[in-house]
Length: 216
Image (cartoon, rainbow, N blue to C red; front, top):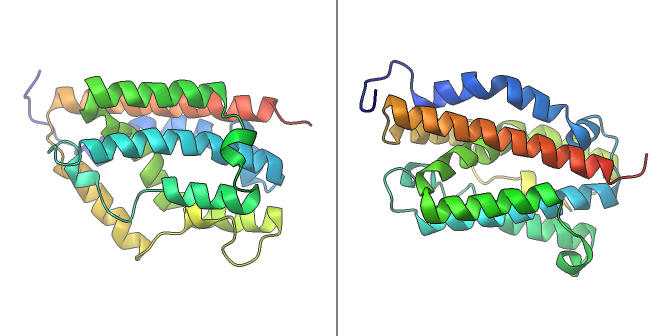
């Protein structure tokens, strides 16, 4: 019932109710290859190109609505990744990356969905922030090391996407506290959980499409 009290906070519900899809996403397509260290620079740049499109749409929407009580608690200044993705693409491909590399169709459709949410249902952007930003905080350090090893990178070249300012444990706690500080009732939580599940399904489609586009 709308307005009903809930016994579990949003952060806990999101974690529990998206866990299976999260595991599937990690084992899907190009992400599975990446986690195994089986990726080349061209394929990795294709992934970054698609992610840049997503983050640009997501983070533009979050910034647009940053004063809303159902968005503001998640707008931590350390989180945005769009600029870091731009820098990594420049380092690994060159300044012409936006012209040379086409994003996946799944990423184009996902970005369009995020832009539509920003216009029509901005509160649901919080679900996609959860899918991306909290995932980055939890897994970024491991992925950064895998990418550096697979592509034989030096220092932080090409891996700024995974580098956060500040202590990661503190950032994760602050972000989870932000989730639980959002306006909450059972209907809102159900809507955000469903939207996050949709976000993971969109990632699975994107990872599979990117893998299918690569040789071998």
